[in-house]
Length: 92
Length: 141
Image 1 (cartoon, rainbow over the protein chains, first blue to last red):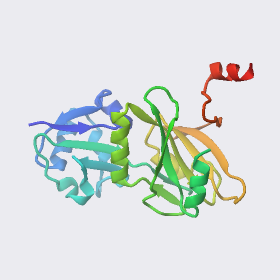
Image 2 (cartoon, one colour):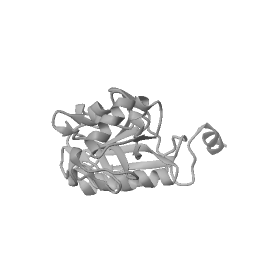
Image 3 (cartoon, chains in turn green, cyan):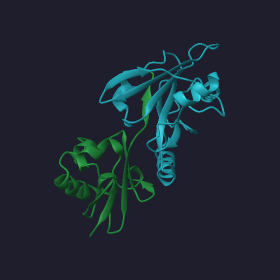
Image 4 (cartoon, chains in turn green, cyan):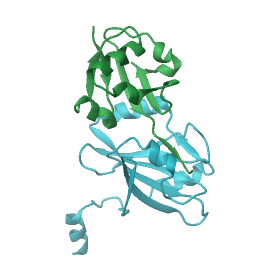
């Protein structure tokens, strides 16, 4: 089983520079656990005590997983998961 | 500069966007205004689906986000604590426009890497001009 996960520039130091990695799992949560076993520390950049981090966007194919099931989102062979840190900030 | 009229149009909300350029060249060439999904005078955030569409487009075109810009509506054009903690593109130049003064826009640029802010000069170039020492020498002749 292979799910492609596209890695943003800021996280590539954790994947040895790789822009895309492969993982497996039936849910996003399982997939991230699998990736963390391969690339230590990766999961912590995406997940905190409340679930997926507020300012990290995770997409399953063409959809934002916030509108699917968050960490419980079902994933399957052939899917592509894309991670993009939110571009945000403010005047304070 | 292009982003000044846009920031005024979005004032009192913060305006935001990207200037894309060919990967590895550090040349900002293609201006992409983005919706501020937060629609706030003190916060900006790219809409997540618009960001996906634009980032995929950059990838297809072999481009990078060379400049990420946003406006400060009531404070100076310096990165706030939030700007610094959320800066997520280590290769980008963070351009800030302050629209707090109605007549005079303040435009400044910074690198923000691992929480460290370094200011840099901003040179405004017109259409038909190239950035770089070779072009500057040509203009002086």
